[in-house]
Amino acid sequence: MDKATKYALQLRVIAQESYPNVDRHSFLVEKLRLLIQQLKQSIHHLKQLDDAMIQLAQQLDYFENIHSIPGIGKLSTAM
Image (cartoon, rainbow, N blue to C red):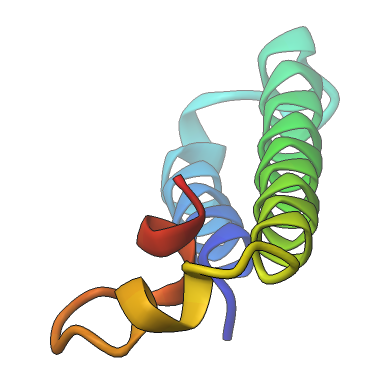
């Protein structure tokens, strides 16, 4: 399960637990749905940017040298 899905599920649980206090069609519920959707889109977009950055960095000569250091991942190497 990716980070976005995990956050969305947590927010959904919070919304369901507060549901008896808030009408299902309340603007607050709709706002929460929109925030969940935006969060998922933002995390997905960041993942795409990370992947693109890694692909670009892998073209550099020193990428594998730095990546071979224990504890240094691809994303850290790309930065």
